Length: 257
Image (cartoon, rainbow, N blue to C red; front, side, top):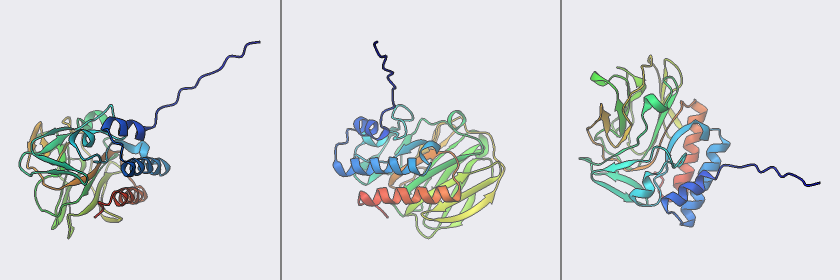
């Protein structure tokens, strides 16, 4: 009797797909990316991410790819940007990236997070953002400064988190985990928890290194970014675990701050 073999198809390794698309063969970067993916999966963080930009490879093409899914949300770069082994540095006057990720199409109103790994200690410009209406309504944005942090905490209308910072260097996370609960984190520390009702999501893609004000860049930032992510809301424990994974990733590449 002939036996019928059942063939089960498995999805490819996202790390391998990313490395191939980015043209990365360096063994140190390869190991760091694979370790990062395994760590995020082990911590239950991988499934919460919509877009992950590791900023590795040292060139515009490599830095544009979304590690979570290379077929979605590839960044389109514009203006003056320096791509290097330590990340992407905008010129502060016209350099930015369009992630192509539109909050109203890809995110949840009451569960959203954005993270930015900053390697530059400045007080200038917006580091990411999108607003879907006049007077900055339906806003998700961040301005990381050495004097303080100025976050519009995902899907908000008027409320912002402003907290003394002391340095613009480090890993910053803003998160909404409910209809009224928002938080901000720096590295392993929780900076603040606030209460603000959520609003509908912006219908304009999130920009990196500037703020997408209803389709137009508004006030450019000049901080070098070594990691950027967009996803679902993160609990305190999840934010702490994410920092640990990202700091380990940066340390393995000798670019931690």
